[in-house]
Length: 389
Image 1: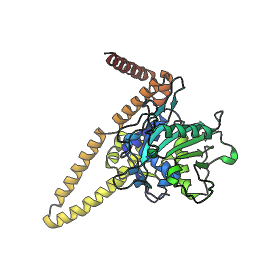
Image 2: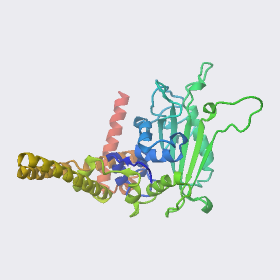
Image 3: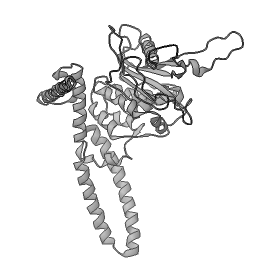
Image 4: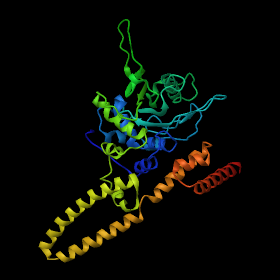
């Protein structure tokens, strides 16, 4: 079990609720991997630069604004100021007459080994979720191709003035769920650049060539299998929970790594959510309610001893409790969840998915889905008209 859990946010709770009961690899489920809490657990498990840092520290290294999902940028684009701050990477790369390739989740994080003072050096990280480990070609070769393009995309047009010294390390992490050979199930491979041999008196600086690392994570079975390597077993258990349809043990496993009980906004919403949200919300509410009652009791006793207003204290606690519950009901997760499903639907429509597929994914009636499709098309038409003007 991790030494220090992550504090769960409303965003990751929304994503967990939307993916409840899904297959772990559809459009909506991939929304999970845009949450810093989920990315943090993966980085802690397989990125060497973060191995000695806690979950909260790693979350601080991730720049939330750099997590991309549908950004279209031509190759070689270099954002101003990229040497001193974290910015969004190109999610897609394309060359004339070349098939468009898309990164599932791409982001930047501070490289703690090389950063310091006023200088910030980044890690460029690509996370890929795959249904099959055997798609008809070696996943490893595709991963190396993505790494090469990821590295090349950091430079603009190459000239005699190009500074190759600004290139920063890239990671490509592939999580494969099914079609894993029996002997390779629940395994991890890390492949990176190494200085294998030197002739003469020379010692190349590792930071100058350690620029590409490919990580392949293989699951392979709906029943989790413990790994002997404790430093990665926790990450594998977490990935297994979110990559397969949620089981009765889902919440128990998630709570080992993400703690929602300290988020006051969540436990106030307990009366307005159902399913997974209700389970998490109820527990958060009970912890917060017990802590609040104990604190109120101590405070009230002290005040009663001083002023003899015991009856007033009880009345105030009761009124405050009612007010808090009412506010929680009004500000529940319903509105946030509806907006989340709308975003998922719009993204699926942009990928030319049928209304039937969208309806099944967001668990909404066909009439509701068709209305969302009309709104999506209206938005596309308005944007087109604006561009034309």
